[in-house]
Image 1 (cartoon, one colour):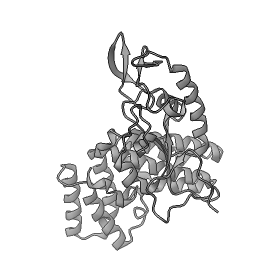
Image 2 (image 1 turned 180 degrees about the vertical axis):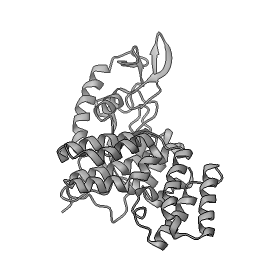
Image 3 (image 1 turned 30 degrees about the horizontal axis):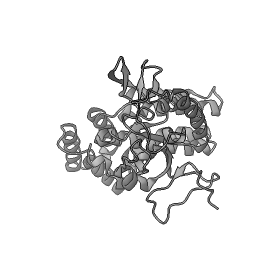
Image 4 (image 1 turned 180 degrees about the horizontal axis):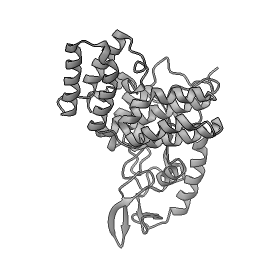
Amino acid sequence: MARDVPSACAKVPLRANRTIVPRSSPRQTLRLGVSSCLLGSKVRFDGGHKHDRFLTDTLGDYVEWVSVCPEVEAGMSIPRESVRLVGSVDEPRMVGVRSERDYTLRMRRFSARRVRELATLDLDGYVFKKGSPSCGMERVRVYQRGMPSRSGRGIFSAAFMAAYPLLPVEEEGRLNDPSLRENFIERLFAHRRWRILVDGHPTRRDLIAFHTAHKYLLLAHSPERYRALGRFVAGHKRLRIQAAVGRYGADFMAAFSVRTTRRKHTNALQHIAGHCREYLDHHDRAELAQLIADYHSGLVPLIVPITLLRHHIARNDIPYVSDQVYLQPHPKELMLRNHV
């Protein structure tokens, strides 16, 4: 029987076959924290919302949302006086714009408690509201002597990110950038695959297989960490498996925090194409090389050479690369690689 949805979880536009997976089974669905207003909840200071259709109508098919509105959950009313950050960028105070009432202590106490609660929900990431004095991830206005500088971070988001430095986080505004969107969602699914591995009590062989399947995806993010993780997997036998898994996981997620580039993608594509050469004739090799070059030049999106590679790999059942996560790191229905 499926376990109950935690009271903090909001399920929005789910299909009929979506269920909550029992803890005894690996959970395939992403679980993301999110600013409540982005789901359409009318919790903003003016009684409105900032409904983000990509989150609910597109990504929502793959996500169980954990909705949080720090200001309301900390006891502030709807509607309410707007607030802003003032003073030190590193430790700003939250005050009312008109009344100058200080909400700092209330928000800090709430943030500390809520961050601890969220630790029990096994989150895969978080989407924050841009510019919010409670939820903004970066470039939040902090006022000093009445003058704002975009150098701050919301009080709740700062506490959350300090507690979970390797968890993928992003702001809804930045998700309008196709490259940032693809990178963030790739990190989310990487984190879920990693958690499934950890929850399965992996052996050393499991860890090696996991790393092998992610090699070219890691290469497309961080060639340096790709090499370092390869050396670690090859030489970690002196560590107990639990310690090895923990160390690998920290560097694995850190690698995905490095953005991909067209050059790094081209490098990964060429590595995979190298494994296909002996299975292809001259015409097919030339066609594949040209499409990779066209992608490198910005003439076609990433999905074009990926699709041809997947075609050749499936038709010829090419070993080693057939199981590479790089070829489909997230659901194709999201069409993220059509735009990068």
